[in-house]
Image (cartoon, rainbow, N blue to C red; front, side, top):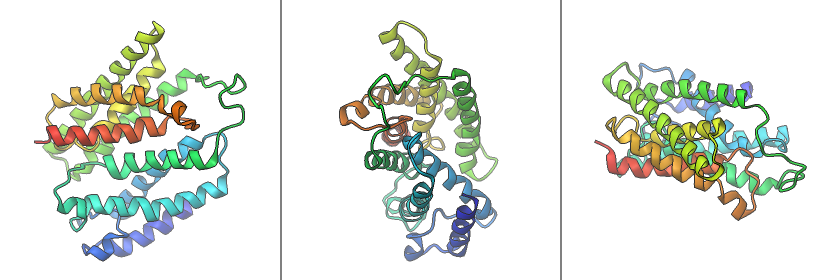
Length: 273
């Protein structure tokens, strides 16, 4: 994994200063000269790949997974990120707004997770009592969510690339959307199971974080409530899609990240100011 990241950093560093359309096909993101791309790019890439491979937990082989990570991050993610963030990209040219990666990060990795799990097939015992889907350690789920929640401040607010009011507002709306998303998911689960679910709250938190990502630097604080409610509701119901499609998405990556990213992009179109 480290060797792959070093290789990708070397490729991106060679073309990182270019703003041409041709270089845009390979460039992940155009950074100002004050920010070292060797530090920021590998952190971004590693998160995207981790999301995509999460759908094939408990059944994916390591070597094919590494090959997939290299090919996908180079050919798919780089192109989409460039379309969105490079000034020469066609999405940027059309005025598209995506502050921290609703499309390049979440929709692309969520869609990749769906395709990966579809091609790899189901786990042995999927759909039977042999494979228990209930989380076996709620404490670890909560701890992991806390780490994600805190890290998301650096992801969204850090995309401002400066200590500015935009970074502050990005942090504010990130926290608010996550909180509302967690409560919304929890209420929807309570409606069906008549009990409060810590795992459901954590799922809603992630859904809210995903949704607010594209608009975190553009929207007012009050709109984060709408983001949280919309993402928590849409992603909660989207978890049923894997049963309708007959796909074994182990961690609901498509439902939370692809659908959450789509909801966030749509909300950004309404609330960006």
